[in-house]
Length: 312
Image (cartoon, rainbow, N blue to C red; front, side, top):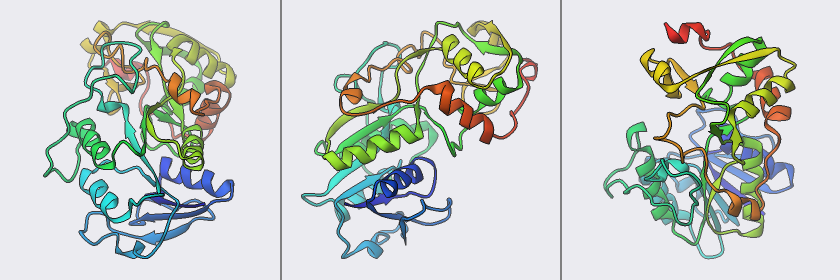
C-alpha cells in the first residue's frame, strides 16, 4: 500500500512512518524538511503547505492512504482539495481538545459536544484556539474519513515533556510531590501504539470518529507502576489543588507546571474519556511502567526544576 504522510518528520508523524515502513508499506513523507529526519525507509518530498500551490510536488502521484496531522485549517483544506479522491483512505489526527465540556467524566467521541469551529477565514492556529481550529479541520476532512482524536501522547521523541517529567523525576527517587489525590484519573497513549493503530486503520479502511487514548488509570497506581519499573525508591507527598494554586504551580504543561495534572472538578472529563469504541476497532495500549516510563527515563533530559522549587 502506498501511504502519504503529510508531515512525518517529528514525533507522531515519524512514528507512523516508522510503523508503516516496518510492516512493508511504501511510505512518502511530505513536509518542509526542517523539523527533523523522516523514518528510515520512507521517501521524502519537500512541500510548503502554507503556499497556495505548496502541494504541487505531489501532483501526478497516487496514494492508497493519506495521514494528516496538521493543526492549521488552511493547510487541511488545501490538502483535501488537492489530494482527497474516491478510493483514497484519509486519516486526520485531531485532539480531545475539540470537546466543549471537560467537566463530565466518561464522555464518548460520538456523543460529546464540540467547540464551535474557528471562522472560515482563519488559516492558522494558536494555543488559544487550538481546539476550535481542529474542529474546523475535522469539518474540512469530512465524516467519510478516519478522525482520530488523540489525547496526551507519550513515548519516544516526545517534545513536550508532558509525560517525560514523571519517569525522569521518579528515577531520582526520594520524596516526590504528587498533585491531587492517588485516586485522580490519568489517561494517555504511547506514540508507538497510536502509530500502530493509525496504520492498521488505513489497512482495514476504518472510518469514523474515535478518541485515540489509553485506558483510564488512577494517578497513584500509575506513579507506583512507573517507579517499580525504574527500580526507584520513592515516597509520594500528595498536595491538594488549593495549595498548588496558592503557590503558582500550574497545570498540564509549561513553566512551573506539574505535567498530567488538571484541576478538579473543572477537568474531571478530560482524562476520563470512554475509549471502548477505539479498543473494539483495534487500538491497544502497552503497560505504562514496563515500557513507556522506562524508555522515557532513559532518553529524557534532566528535570526542569526540583519539586521544592515549584513551591517557592
